Length: 209
Image (cartoon, rainbow, N blue to C red; front, side, top):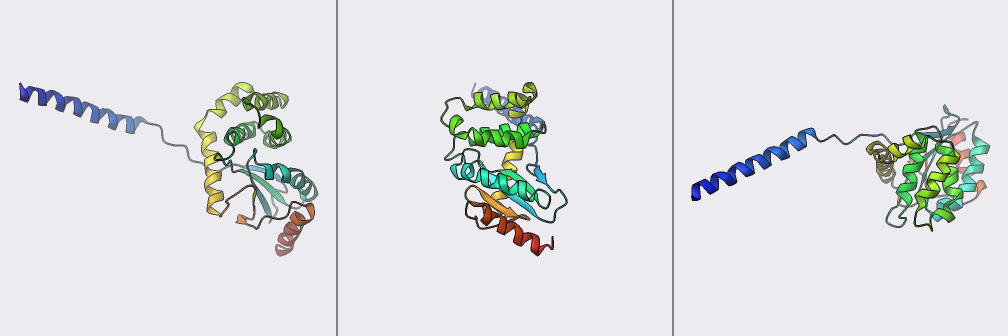
């Protein structure tokens, strides 16, 4: 009886081990990503100005009109990039907002969604259902809502955001907004058009533009 019991246990364990192995083999691989691709301005410029943003961050909100003005001024000379840096430890809706922005990007409307998220920040961040506001923004942008919902739940969108997080940590970013020029983190400027413009002017001069 004892031997029979041991044999039964052995069969069960073997079956369990086999199941684990099969699951490992059949489980889909984690999608890989090099990060977001949200660019505007002069695409062949030798100067790329990158901002890592958290859509729920007060400092990012404060910088928003400044950076918007700078982008308009330098759009014919500089390549501007926005990447994701949701700090979820302090901003519970930050990653959701980033996911909506990246999903909008997949329909060619990243910058439009970017603007709506910042301009509406003080409303949706106090809501219990911020996604209702995000959906409203998407509808105003005439996005394909079925595709949007699919992208929001996709592992690919999550992989893009995680790749941006990995990159900002690599360059030494610890808070938002984090700024970089040509992939190198720079000291955060004062929140003024003049200070940000000087950084860009210096970079253009260095690259003889």
